[in-house]
Each structure stands twice: as structure tokens, then as C-alpha cells.
Amino acid sequence: MEKYLINPNQKIAEISKDIYGNFSEHLGRCIYEGLFVGKNSDIPNVNGMRIDVVNALREMRLPVLRWPGGCFADEYHWKDGIGDPAGRKKMINTHWGGVVEDNSFGTHEFFELIDQLGCDAYIAGNVGSGTVREMSEWIEYITFDGTSPMADLRKANGREKPWKLKYFGVGNENWGCGGNMDPYYYANTYRRYQTYVRNYAGNDRIFKIACGPNAEDYNWTDELMKTAGRHMDGLALHYYTVTNDWGKKGSATQFSDDEYYRCLRKAYHIDEVIRRHLEIMNRHDPSKRVKLIVDEWGTWHDVEPGTNPGFLYQQNAMRDAIVAGMSLNIFNKHADRIRMCNIAQTINVLQSVALTDGADMVLTPTYYIFKMYKAHQNNTLLGSYITSPETGTDGERVPSLTESASEDANGVIYSTVTNTDMTRAAEIKCQVADSAVKSVKAEIVTGKADAYNTFENKNAVGCAEFTDFVKTEDGFTAKLPACSVVRFTIER
Ligand code: AHR
Figure 1 (tube, rainbow, N blue to C red):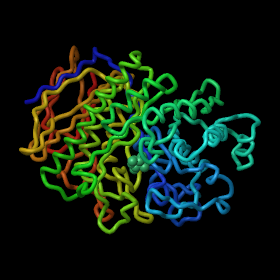
Figure 2: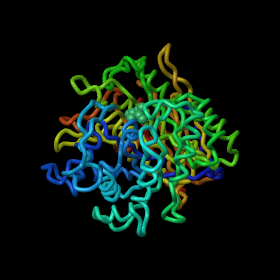
Figure 3: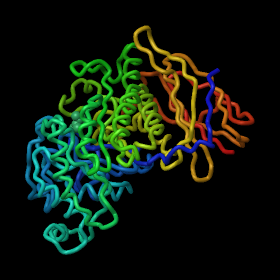
Figure 4: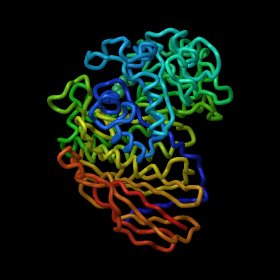
């Protein structure tokens, strides 16, 4: 029986709700078809936004959405996406499939979506191929409530009041698709561009995010923090879980036991990557003012057979749900430094929460993890620890259990536990320090590692009540099925 200790006396930090954010790029069928179908579509929509998808994301309590990229961001010229849609420029989406981008989803449409979702906006600006002026004017267009060339243009385009822009990213992956810069060059370029990201909304300041490292590029973090740390509010890390290698990543639904555990091992590795970046950030910024942002994360598998390789459309199995559960537990545990995370990418691209086919929509196992974990949003992270023997195959080893625990304003504790073992249930004994536990409730997402939802069978993996536990004086004992993620709600 594994021991699980939760200590409500140890209140660590607030878990920012924005850790549960998503990312949506002009890539494949994420924006077009996935989120936006246009007002004239037969697919039920409000002002062009899919009703089914918007409702699902609201139900998941999506707190923040990143847009328009990704690599697309550094080729996006926002003025091409305003005004009468019929007159908007058509361009080639060079990064993603070479398809025509007709700019019918632009700034006004994005904020309409944000409004319908009831979430916050995170926009990534164009450094790679855009000018300082272009970036500066976009901020003015979005946020200035007065008379100015850009505010007047916004009004002429039908929007009187400015919008609320919470986060702004100064470029994306500028070490790669965003301009192939070295860290020193980018750090200075960042300093220049961010100067003109003005706070037109007064005290409602924009949270400025610098392009951070690719996975284990610790030198990038060091250079950025040294040269530009005092000009930023956040530094954005990207970390993707690729089971095998970039050439042959592996299938989303057909994998060996080794590949199952390899995928989880690589996903779990993000904890070490985060720790090492944080050590560097702590050296430059011991007060922890600058936050770590993980604005692209998730599994990246081979595309589904027969689909456009540039569209990054992949299925999503129970294995992905375990990756999500583990990763979100890890992010929660770093709540003192991590302000926002954005899984890539919302709909129809990479590790998405929903897939669409025409008017049809199916929720993925990953969706149910986000829905279950929403209980942590804005709670206080508590000290907690679980014994977790390794499991896996001879070649691939991972911790069998991961967890995080938080407390809401009423003192209710939420604990989320993953059992990564493919075949063995895990018995755990949970004790909540100095507490008389009144009641315990639980929910579970579980299934065979390769189980997934299809348009024909939408409920192969879902969320259900979990009852295989016994309440004790100060906690509970439980038997977690193989390959499962469970959320416990503990009232004292
Ligand atoms: O999410 C897909 C791509 O991955 C993004 O466009 C880019 O930022 C990253 O390389």
C-alpha cells in the first residue's frame, strides 16, 4: 500500500487558473472548422463560432486562449485580418500545409471567441517578419480607449470599446521559425520591441512574455534572463512529448508497451526541465518576479493516416490523458513560478481536447482530464507527497504514481492522482494531516492505454464516479485501476 500524505498546514502558492490554458493556431483545422466556421455555415454557430465547441470549452472552464501561433504568429500581419472579410488579403500559410489563409478569422473574430468562451486573451506578436511599429499599433488598436489612429480604425471597423488583453508574447520560437535568432540577438530585439508594447489601459497592465527556450536549451534561459529579465513578466518554455524521434514519432493509437512507457517517461521529464530552468531563473531573479510560462506542451504523434501531414491531426488515447494528468500535476507543483500553460492545440491539432468532423464533435480523453482538474483553478497548492515505486518495461521506467493537492476558499481539498501502470492497480492510503475527514467523493478517467473516442463511439473514454475507496478518520484508502487518473474531493 503506497502512502499519500497531504498537509493542509503547508500552503505553498496559488495555482493560477491559467495553468489550464489552451493554444490555438492558424494550423490545419484548429481555427477554421474547429473553432470558427463563419456566420453562413450550416454548422450551428453564433457569429461564426461553433456552438458545440464553445459550450464544451466553457464546460471545461477554459481560462485563457493563446493565438494566432505558433510559427504562424511571426508571419501574421494583423492588418490583413481586419475590415470587411470579403476584402481581406489572401495569403499562403507557408508553415502549415501551404494552404490559402483568407484572413476571415482576425482580431475582431478572436475577441468575439474570447467573449463567448468567457476567458482571457493571450496574443503572440510578430517579431520574425514584422516591425516594431506594426506590433505597437496592434496593441493600440486592441487596447486604447480614446482618440488615436488605431483606436479610430477599430471604431470604424465596428468596435467602439477596446478589448482586454491580458497577455502578450513578443514573438514565438525566435530561436527557430520566428527568425532563427541566437539568444543574445533575440534578448536585445525583445528589449526593443517590448518598449512599444504600451499600457494604453493604464493600471490594467499587459503581462509581457518573452520567447523562452526550446526544451533543454538552458543557455537560452540564462542569456535571456541576464540581458532582458528586467523587461519581462514571463518567459515562455516549449516542451513537446515525442515518443520516438521527430522523424518517426509513433502512432497516437497503436503502440507497444515500451512506447507507452517511453511516451510517459518523456512527458515526465518536463519536471526536470522545469526545475533546471527555474534554477537559472532563481539565480537572476531570486524574488521570482518573472514567471515561467509553458505556452506549448503536449504529445506530438504521427498524423492520422491519410491526413495532410502539414495539418498535425492526431487521435488522442488514454495514454494522452495520463500525460495530461501527470503534466498538470507537475505544473501545479510549480505554482509559485508557473503562471500559465497552454496545451497544443485546442481542436483538431496535436493533443487537442476535441476533434471535429463537419458538424460532428467528439471530446478526447485529454478533455476529461482538464474538466476534472478545473477544480484546482485558483486554489492554494498544498504540501503533499506520495510514495511511488517505478513501473514500466525493462527499458522504460516511470514513477507509478503522480499527484497534486489543493485547497479551495472553503477548505475543501482536491487531490488528483495518476496511476501510470498499464496493467496493475495501485493501492494507496491517504492521510490528511491534523484533519478529521467528513466525506470523500471521487471521479475517474480510465481505460486501456490505447482506448480512444471516435465519431462512431464517443464514450469509449469518459469521466465517471469512482467508488473503490474507503473513508478513514483522517483520509481514505483506495484502489486505483491501472492506467487511470482520479480526482478526490475531501471535506473536513
Ligand atoms: O504547435 C505546433 C508548432 O510547434 C508551433 O507552431 C510552433 O511554435 C512549435 O514548433
